[in-house]
Length: 155
Image (cartoon, rainbow, N blue to C red; front, side, top):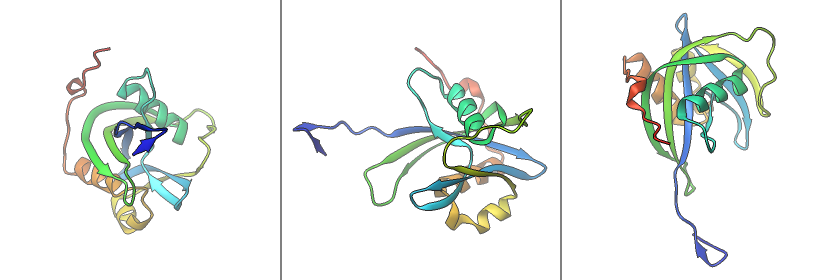
């Protein structure tokens, strides 16, 4: 792609996601997107200067109000956004979460927080922000667990 006569360097968008399961239900957020209302794990972009773990804790709090404690890495997912040149590199973490002590002010666009079973989420796959969301949950349910020590922040 040419921008101002300079070639723009391609880079994947680095994102994080939190997989939080309680009583066989997963914490999901419902967000208002350009494609309509979509379901997703609490997730978002890595910001400059933060670690992956800091990013997933922050994004979970901003999108759901819950206080996330990562306990492991479920997977790293590389996926293209259909009909665009955007690629996402998602780090999905699993862990526990504590409810906010009071109702939280959520990010713009978040319309609801839900606890849904895998079957409920799968039945609504057409409403998922990305097919990667369902794959992350399936991998978690199949027992894929990597230690957090797998990630090294060398800055």
